[in-house]
Length: 313
Ligand code: BDR
Ligand code: CA
Image (cartoon, rainbow, N blue to C red; front, side, top):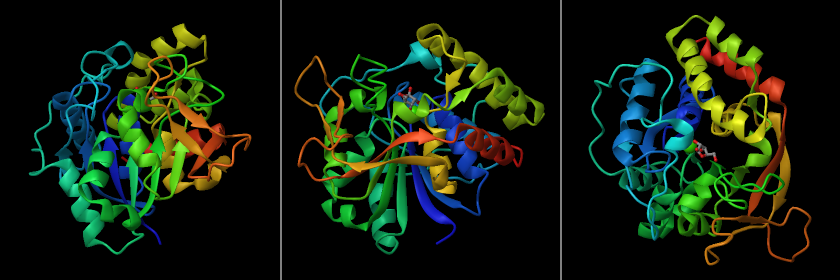
C-alpha cells in the first residue's frame, strides 16, 4: 500500500508547515494529492498564501493548493495570531509565493478525489479546524464510506484544552464541523494535545534542524524560535510542541504512537465547555468506539525521523 495517497487539509501555521514539509520529503511513504486550506490560525487569504510558501520551500511549486472554507459552519472565526504571529508563519523571512492557487474549491477537490480513486485509497490529514472536511461530508455523504482513514490533530483529554480550559484550538474553532466528522463512520485517528505536548522542540532538537544548513532546515528552526516563546511562557515547558507533524509522522511511522480505540464525542452546546473532546478513555460508557485516540509518542524517534526527512529537502 506504499506510498499512501493523502490530502493535507491545513491552516498554516508554523507547525502545519513542518507537517507539510515532512510529507513532501517522504514520497516513498505518502503521495500528497493536494493541499486544501481552511481558515484557522489566520484567515483564509493567509493560510492559502502560507501553504504555497511552504510548497515552494520544499521545491514543490507543482503541488495543487486549494482555497476552502473561510469561516466555521456556524460560528464566528477565532484565529490564533497570539501563537503564530500576524502572518501565521512568523519567524523566517520567506519570499511571497509565485505559484498560483489551484482552480476550484477545496471541498470539491476533496469530494472529487475520493470519488475518483477506489474506496479505501485516500487518507485525509486535517491539521486545522474541520470545516472543509465536514462541508465535503455534508455535500457528498457518499464519500464517508470511501475514506481510508482520517488522521487529524485535535482535542485533548488528560491535557485539557489550550484555547479554553477544556477545548483544543482546532476543535474549538469549529465544533459543529468536528461533530460531523467524528460521527461520519470513517476510521479516525486522533493526535490530541496529550501526544503533541510530548513532541517538544528542545534547544538541542532545534539546533539539529538548524545544523542541516538547508533553507528548509533553517526555516524550520526559525519558525520554532518564533512560536516556542508562547508555550514556554504558558506552560514553562522546554520548547514548543510540534502538534501537526504528529499527523504526517503517523502516516510514515505509525509505530511511534500508541493509544486506545474509544468513543469520542464533541461538545457543541455548552459555551463553558464548547469544543471539548469528550473522550471515554476509561471506557465508562457503553458508547461505541469511533476513534483511535493517541496518548503516547516515542519523541526521540519522532525527532530523528523529522530531522532525517527534512535533510532531504
Ligand atoms: C493546533 O492549533 C493550531 O494553532 C496548530 O497549528 C495546531 O493545529 C494545536 O492546538
Ligand atoms: Ca494547524
